Length: 175
Length: 264
Length: 81
Image 1 (cartoon, chains in turn brown, blue, green):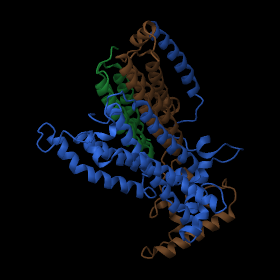
Image 2 (cartoon, rainbow over the protein chains, first blue to last red; image 1 turned 135 degrees about the vertical axis):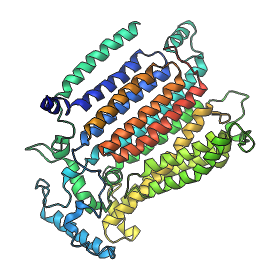
Image 3 (cartoon, chains in turn red, orange, cyan; image 1 turned 60 degrees about the horizontal axis):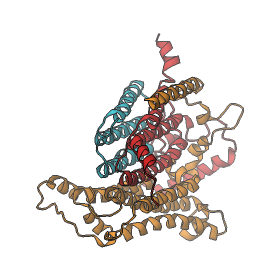
Image 4 (cartoon, rainbow over the protein chains, first blue to last red; image 1 turned 180 degrees about the vertical axis):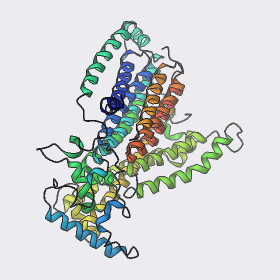
């Protein structure tokens, strides 16, 4: 039973919830009558997509993608960092060590032993970068949509979709 | 009712298809999925290059900032432009004046002071204490984007939110007296121009747009890595200016429906 | 990557999304949307995406909910469904 949970359910449980969140957002955009509720549904859909993208980069047992100069990620450079009181020579030596690594290994396929940082221990930074852009652009478009809905309220006096359609049928838009 | 029924059927159908597609995914948290480690027999994943070589190329410990501002700097430039364009769009949509209404530039007297106003004394006092600390923290977040989570966007939003806090504590004309419309629109333009200037400076020195390594001659650093690190800081400052100004601009226009008096 | 934490927060997320869309008072819907944003920020911090969590806490839960509230104050307070 616990094998069934580990092999069938726990690798995919997160993705099922993301699909459910996306469908909640999509349903709200189609079915709700109030414009603000539609916008909230659109934002829920958007954050569910961003959640999905960021969870592509998750690695089990990995740490955050920020390098730590005094931690185990740089264990091969510790002999150069024996004296913390003089950071400048340490930096130059580290630079030299990195340049050596860069020149002797031209295909990064060769496992993690030759590089100081093992890619399996750090979370994948690329989805984070792309989704930072997505979040901020999302709030900008939410701002524009809210401005348009304020002008709709000023013009028609209501934010309910069916009442707006009634008013559009009976009175034509001036100018 | 028909709309809700159609919506339910469409959503169930789409959801079913997506759930069927989920069974093909690599498991959650798998370090050997194609996005994390590349495909067997194909190429490696580019994120392996970013994790292994990014410190050697740019000397910035925060991998997300180095990818955002240097390797993918072009995306970040146009994201800043999108934020600026959204601010301009809100300005254009809401700033429709009827004849006889006073122009928004001329209304800056605040009618509400929280000193004698007992209904706002808690909110007013708390905000007055927090606003300078929030601005200092925002500048810290921008400046330390290389070493800790943070960067231009986060710092810019916190800076914009500190001005919004001023507007919530007193009222909107009080915040507008400290950050008038000409100033915040000018600051937004300056932010985009600073980012573009870094890119054009690289072009003037005969390399590609946003190729920061060549700026080592201008910035007097030893080696192209430190030039890239310093250019990243400059570019993040530009982003922070634009984001802060536009967040306050969107709030000022949304809360007063473009007229810039009254408001929340 | 703690599975029980993930499950609890995800269930709360679905509940918050459904409630935010069901209440008739638009001001409450905006506040619950703010709660949704904070729960997502927590989830990302647990997944190791600290930059994204920082941005979502500032932008999604703070400024985005604030824009919704500002619009609700200028338009109508209640919705019909």
